[in-house]
Image 1: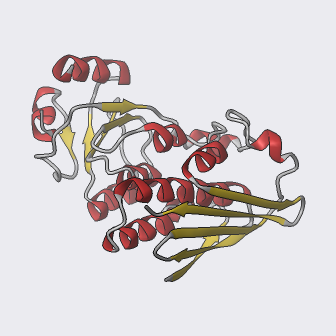
Image 2: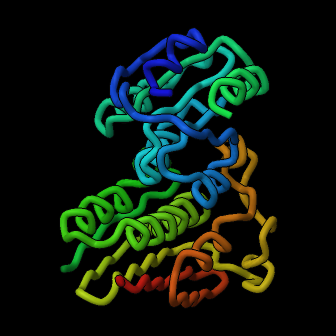
Image 3: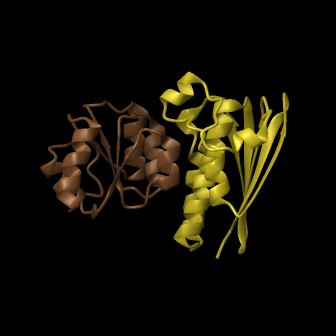
Length: 109
Length: 137
């Protein structure tokens, strides 16, 4: 499953189309940044409702190819710019965290 | 190799720049990915702590063949009870900082976990200096 497949299958809006061929085998769902910093693994997709620039900073430091913002969240302008600068694929779902996790789990379990 | 960065109080937007620069440099030097991850996790957490709690400060990073040493020195309120602060779950972060997804009391424990040597000098009403060493294998 690639980021591109994920966009299609989860009907995600893509705000920065990079890392589309990156392989997704797992994800980390959390809104606590230090938990992600401490426990997320590289290659995972990050599911969150946080919409500020520190999210892309952490995604970049942890080598996470994509971030899914849930519930139609709107990223801050500097977050979107930072995603472009750091090559993080920024995705938006209309679903809640629970729904995104459930669908994604079904796809990649 | 020596780098210096400045920390501004409450400037979350630029937090992470030092970690990002250090990551880039270590990558260019061919340091193993696991050591790079440990160093940048520790540095990012220390940076965020200073931005969230202190009035300003500096970050000094020295890289040589054996280790990366990172010193985050701030002018700030200091840590009244270091033992408590090292406990996972303990935090004095403001509601605004918590809204951003920080303040879970995981910063200092994350730093400890990801460094080979950690020294915290703190004086209430003066400031805190966090010295972190990650050995490069």
